[in-house]
Picture 1 (tube, rainbow, N blue to C red):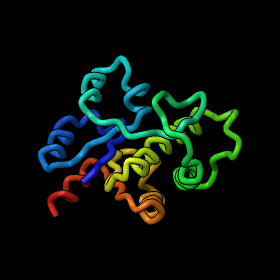
Picture 2: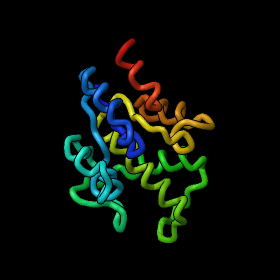
Picture 3: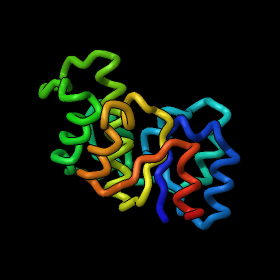
Picture 4: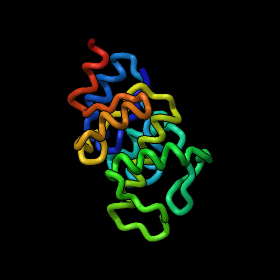
Length: 154
């Protein structure tokens, strides 16, 4: 199975080892590798994890990237923002910029054709029916770190 892990999962190195031991193909989003862990103790860890493609958002994305996918990104943003994400992206608040980054990371799991997206960000991906909406719309299981191994042990 293919699993894309969110940045917040990198602190759980034993979980990453357990996923590998179960034969998982593990991926991270480009934003995680190029921006979010730069200068942290996780920088060397992400060098050992494959990177899934990310849609290009000028002023946000790093290279290499892929173009397109705006419809999926729009749907993800609607779900994780509970419908409040602005259509115009030129004046985003910090919260909205974080939602955009969350959406880009989730969209990477779609582009990589992952089976599971693993994140402990319940506010963005799980609470208020978001997990069910994302799974129904995109066919990717959304699991927290304490749930993901059961997908392999079933």
